[in-house]
Every structure is written in C-alpha cells, then in structure tokens.
Image (cartoon, rainbow, N blue to C red; front, side, top):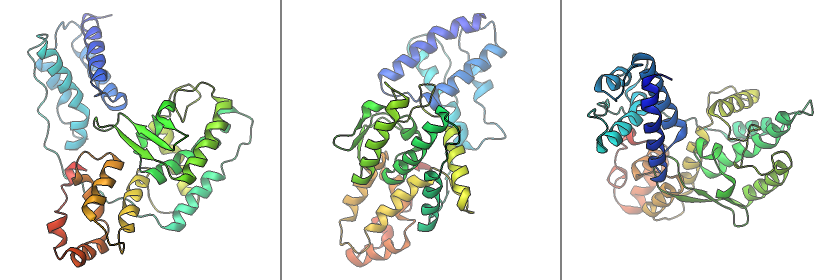
Length: 321
C-alpha cells in the first residue's frame, strides 16, 4: 500500500461514516466518485501524505466530454470531503469551484396508452427457457419493478435500492428515507399495486430468503443501473419504435396526475404541494415543470382563478429539475 493510500483510507472511512450518520450519503453517486478521486490521487501522487489543492484541481476540472451539470455531480463529493477535513484541521485545501448550473430543457417521452400496454405486455411475456435462478427471478421481478415505477412516481434508484423493511405490505405504504436530498417521505401504493407487491413478495421469498432489498439480485444486493437500462430498452423495443427511458415513467406519473386536475374544480396550489411531497421534490420549482407540460392546465387556471397562468405558476427554473 502506498503512502497516499495509507493516508486516505482512515479519512475516507470516517468521512463516509459521518455523512451516513447525517443521512447525507448516496453510495451510487458519492461513493463511486469518491473512490475515483482517491484512485486518481494514489496514481498521480503516490507519496502524498495530505490532501492538497493541486490534487483537487487535477481531478475536479471540467472535462471536454462533460456538461456543467455532470461535472458538478462528479466533483461535489470532493468538495464535501475537503470541507470535512478542513473543519478538523486535516487540510488547508478548499473544494473545487463548481461550474454554473445549466438549464436543462429535457422533454420526457409522452407515452401513449398503446405504448404502455405494449411495454407491460412485453414484461409479462418474459420466458424462462431453462430452470436457472437468474431467469426465474428476472421473470418475477421485472414486471413488478416497472409497474411500481409507473404507479408510484418513484425515482429509479429509489426502487432499485428499496429495502424490505421500508415496505409496509399490510398498509400499502413505502418509506423513502434517503434519496435525492434528506427529506423522508411516504408513498402510498394503489390497491392494485399493493396486491401485485404482496404476490411478488411471497414468490421471491422462495428464491431469496432473508433478503435485504425488496428487489434483490442473486448476489444479495440491489440491481445496478445497467440492469435497469438493459431490461427497459430490451422490453420497450420489443413492440415500440419510439425512444423512451425508464425514468420517463416517473415523468408520466407526474403528468398524469396533473392531467386529472383538469375539470375537477380544484385548489391547484394544494395539489401542487401534495404532488411535490409525494415525488420527493425539494422545491415546487421541480413540480411546476410538469404543469408546463400540460398546456390545457394554463387555460383552466386562468378560467378558475381569473389570474394568468404565469402569475400562478411562474416560468420554471429548469436547473432545479
């Protein structure tokens, strides 16, 4: 082990423990990027015995292949790590200067009823040609996993990393305690989804007894992003020609909820707040994004309230989405 490795090992361990205790740790993003930063430092500065500004600058600079937002996501944890060490007198280095946020104007795929029917038909048609555990668990898991995304608005990582002790199958409630941000929230399952989840739970127990995650991989952990992308794209393209992503199911959940407000005679602000809390948005700005995707709602708001749409729902700051 190099001198640099010996220096970093206890510090990263204590930093991670601290962030977890504060409920501010995301292994998928923070853990991966911290490991990459440390590996870079070990390779480039094998004899280093402290964190320097040069080490931070050499890894945190914006790359030609990155957008501002992807660079910010990659280097954020390094800034938090440097701050943690600085507050304890273990370095004089400061975190990187983060590039300015870019406005993201991604428009999610607008699913048709036929496309969704095609997709879930493909999920249900998964075949098990050999009595292999990986084939059996895929057939059990995939149709339930994507129906949960569709019916609940969960983020894809929230569903993948969902722990069994966070799923109340008696009352039909999911506890999301740590995801994007730090706010805990509870998501109520539709009765039909609850029945599906109960059947799945009984079936998967036979193949993964004592599992920690609700959707367990055979290795005992949760499924990776690559598993999600592979299964969605393969099944989506079986009967559909358009381009879509698994995350668009979350967008669809939001837009479908907003669509239901049309013609109801409603308190739109209260509904915005409820939808925002259900989806785990840190601000209403993110939820307003979906309102702008439903053109008919603008006319309805003006008709009901006498105020213009932009007065009630200001232009969205896409950078917060």
